Amino acid sequence: MENKIVLIVGGSGGIGSATAKRFAKENAKVILASRNKANVEKVAKDINDNGGEAFAIEVDATDEASVKKMTEEIANQLGKIDVLINAFGQGIIQPFMDINPADAKEIIDTNVYGTFLVTQTVMKNMKEDERTSVIMFPGTMGKFVMKNASVYAASKFAIQGFTKALVEEQRRGNTRFSLLYLGGVDTPFWDDDRVNMKVKKDMMLTPDEVAEAVFYAVNQPSGSVMNEVVIQPESHQLV
Image (tube, rainbow, N blue to C red):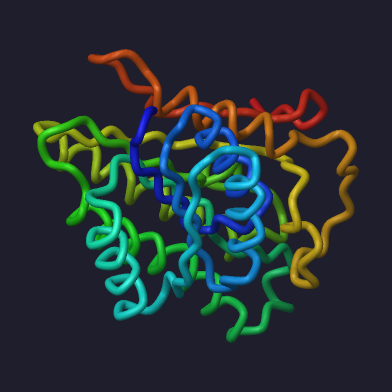
């Protein structure tokens, strides 16, 4: 990963920040993007203070001008991107009849339209003559369903379908796509008032464990790709 340019959109979250630190250990140039620049600046400073190389940038994943500005800044200052990690998203776990339509729209806009917009814009600015990677997090709600997850599951199943269609389109290209179906990760996701679900965080996956899986996916040997993987706490197994 020496000098590889790794863009993590959602870099201030638990998974995003842990993944950034994992790649920085391998001497990658890590770019942390988020709506909250102050938060990613803290993560970037921590990485830089520990000998890594990280940059913070502000972006609204649902705003075309903002996403375009982000990619142009990266291209002008660092070069073309090797790895895109879409670690952003919002959740809602509520009975269908209780969901505020405005909240539903925000979830769909962020998780679906945002993923489309970021992925399309960044792929136009990825290296064309070398192997590149795109990492997606549909989560287990993008593979299984449970009650009170209608809108959230819809947004995550959309990411699965979107990514699998891209795999078909890009078969002759150099970009590899990986879908990580994660169940129960100890992140601030569960602190959102719209996520009405009691959980035991001490029994969940840690962001560091997820970061190892992401690093493994990106560093597959030449000629192979980790298309999909389900990772869950032992107590959360879904089959």
